[in-house]
Amino acid sequence: MPTAVAVPTTAPARITSLDVLRGVAILGTFASNAWLFAHPGGPTAWFAEGPSPDVVETALRTLANGKFLALLTLLFGVGIELQYRSAVRRGARWPGRYPVRAAILFVEGLVHYVLVFEFDVLMGYAVASLLVAYLVGRSDRVVHAWMAVVSGVYLLGIAGVTALLLAVPGGPEVPEPAAVSTASWWAQVLVRLDGAGLYRIELVLIVPSATVLFLLGSRLVRAGALDDTPAGARIRRRLMLLGFGVGAPLNGLTAFAGPAWLLVDRYVLPPLIALGLLGLITGIVLRSRGGAPRRAVAAVGRTALSCYVLQNVLASVLCYDWGLGLATRFADARPWWVVGLWAAVSLALVLCASLWLRRFERGPLELVVQRVYARPARLAPSPAPSPAGAGLADAVRQKHR
Image (cartoon, rainbow, N blue to C red; front, side, top):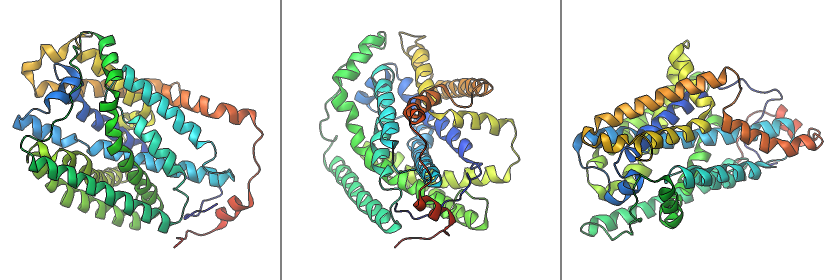
């Protein structure tokens, strides 16, 4: 079994900051999506019309746009690394049944896309995670080469499209989705089905980006970026310097540079800022003693999948005309009412997650995934620890070149 990290014989201590990081990422992701739900015509109309040119709204939207989604993507890679370590520690084959987990996530994303939200990311995560599952245990040389090639092609593609947008006045013509009123939930479902080719084209951007960020999250764990050690603190300082010293100033420029910089503004610079957020939040958690706010955010992180879906369901009910119709009612109160929407939904997530975890160990969707994924394993005999797993458990950390 190829590997580039030693695995302890006993289960490692839970990473203190991981639940808080996930919680921040989930709440921050909704801070970006809230602008789509709050548009009077919903995400479909926002897609057709583009973002508002209002300076205040642009500034508020820029604070969250892409950053927390990139942070969530990094943390997904951390999760794959931890699952890989668990498999090696138990002497199980890897990726083993992980493709089943990826398939479950893809189905959840498909249902979420059709019934709830046009810009679902779970389907893209499922495809990228399946690929990363076969790469995570390879040598550093293989992983670094893969990341370099995919990143290079990805950035060249973004640069080419951005250059085209800058060269063509008004930008090239893009097919618009069919107009739909938010007065009918079923009409929205039909638009998502009819416009799947247009809406799901974002997967072309999500999958390669997620592949690189998943692997980067895995390697950050191996480097000790989340550890409470002097080496971990040095890594976190470098991440913050990269994110806030380089990424944030550049992102401030692209945010107001015009729509031609949309792809750079959402897919290129936010991952740099996400690295800074990872370093900053981890450092704060490691230095803090806990408290109610930390427990509240951590509860959202422990139920991240359920909260991701729930926040979009709540926003749909609150904003669409088939629900309470707040998007139409408060259309003239933008951008500040959108901030209130984010705060209200975030508070609801914190309360629901905290109450749920008083009785259950995982969130509702997490329980469904676990039970579906684990059922065949319960019927099969447990495998004996392999010699390879035992050897890895006694090995020291090393890098394969």
